[in-house]
Length: 79
Image 1 (cartoon, one colour):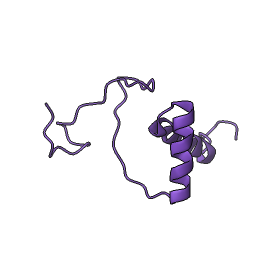
Image 2 (tube, rainbow, N blue to C red):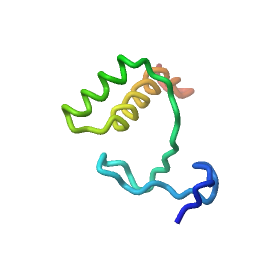
Image 3 (cartoon, rainbow, N blue to C red):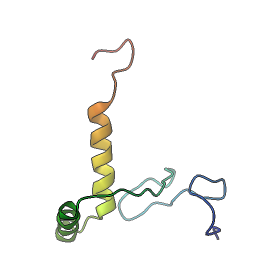
Image 4 (cartoon, rainbow, N blue to C red):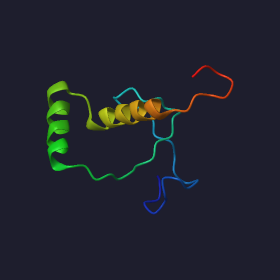
């Protein structure tokens, strides 16, 4: 059992297993905290309820989209 005082980045923390959202069991996950305007929270909750897809899955998708948008082209590659 994991010690409650262990940080998600500490060696004692174990990678999350696959969840119902299809996350890969070999992928490590870290909990983070963000402040979101209340109207967006209500809309996200409603979307998740309506589609039966977890809010966390939508947030991970949004982060991936954002990172892809601002990703720098690799050196020597085409822009």
